[in-house]
Length: 289
Image (cartoon, rainbow, N blue to C red; front, side):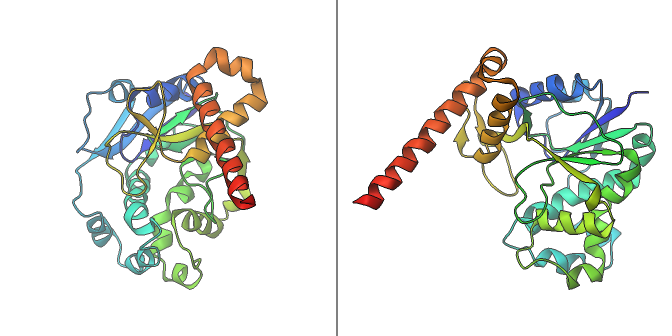
């Protein structure tokens, strides 16, 4: 049995350019098995479904609240209302369901592995993924939004049940007594980690992935707007993620390495860096006028 299982949960966005980076820098590098958890609304005629060792497909829900009504009777609805305009309601109420489905139905499979990587379909990787660390939850730096970034984590199997139990957290009335004024997915994730005594096990590592989307793909929260040149219809969702990932790779391995191995990413980085520099000069010039 292999040591690693990579779980992609959510909406299969990002396309082959994104998924090829997952195969190269994560799945093949760690000799990992691959699991997919998504609804049946998505096209399954892709390389992802061909390569996946496990396919955990459920019927699409017109209203994800129906899942909570069926499975929970506590304060979950009131909790989501605290983040109506922050993405907690529109996005969190959906992707928390994926964690709960895996927790309730597939822990017997997860327990065959030493480490689990829980991540999204739309993460494009720029460098080889770090290996697991005993008793540590590895989460990339940045994108915390006053909490902890919840897009990607590598954790030992012993932590998985607590890690996935976020629906139990939001269903508990005590969670309504201590939520942040700006309550979003990231602050909720941090509070959940604290409530399960996992927060002190979090170890951050230099970011080496960023969120992508193909032009026109459905999203429950932010729409991608920044074009990734030399890739067919691929967009960057959060520019800071991209800039941090490439800057970290340059600092780690040098610009020559990046030019030889990921030249298209390097050109996009140079272009965005130039735009950023020109924008700063423009602000200074306008300030002096």
